[in-house]
Length: 339
Ligand SMILES: Nc1ncnc2c1ncn2[C@@H]1O[C@H](COP(=O)(O)OP(=O)(O)OP(=O)(O)O)[C@@H](O)[C@H]1O
Ligand SMILES: [Mg+2]
Image (cartoon, rainbow, N blue to C red; front, side, top):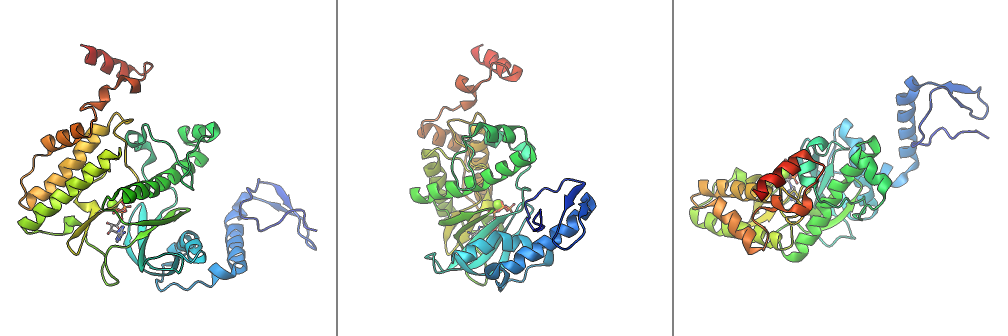
């Protein structure tokens, strides 16, 4: 009997470890051989897996993309959530979006699969402003309560970075669910697994819905759509949700309707000290686009009105419950506020 199974992908091979295979001389393993072994393991695993190995998607991925596409969407295929990947809609630094044919287990025709690249999600160093007050979620969208895991995330260990990455994806999915239920104009979310989200596709088989940023609108339509976007922002705020990266780039337009997309960085107005600034920036960016289309806007007043209407403090950054007495900046802020 072999003392060690050669093809366990998850094994961490220590340098100098002895590998013994039946009928063969024991081999001492060195790190340089790792890549070769990983490739062999991968081939082996794929050849063992009849279902995924035989998947023939219409979309022919480039070689480098093929592996992670199968890793990411193979499960969706197995669950019959999708029956085909038709084409790539958009490839980005952080995520790629694919047009898929829905499988028998999902009541839809065309679906968009947003697949995040492994751990390159956001610049994790700069995500602090968004993450403040946020509850971290695991790969099933459940709250992470384990202190060891929290510590790993805080310390940015490799494992912790993976968890953070996962948390962004789960955040986008659970936010979509919450917003969809509330009646916000977002794509209906269907499933989440691993590093991918499945949602309703906006567009048709020939072309995906353009973003507002790609379009010039007639003034009358622009006025109507502006009201609709503001209605959405208001509705979101009423359930403690601020988009955080809203602009004409993240609003799709299809057959006269708008759809808000791209939600991994939403923040809550009640627990994030930067919330009002983030909110005002969202409103300002939206206004910038619509004022170019001839709509009269006043972003500052509008942001303040919406904020007050939803009973949030105009300056959440002075909420003393959120200040850290150990932090010199927070202390200075508190002092200036008292004065
Ligand atoms: N549900 C959808 N239906 C149709 N197209 C979509 C859908 N979701 C996303 N897209 C397309 O994919 C693009 C990228 O999606 P998204 O904005 O969610 O990802 P992203 O990682 O933030 O990319 P970017 O950095 O380009 O904004 C969108 O601009 C849009 O063209
Ligand atoms: Mg986007």
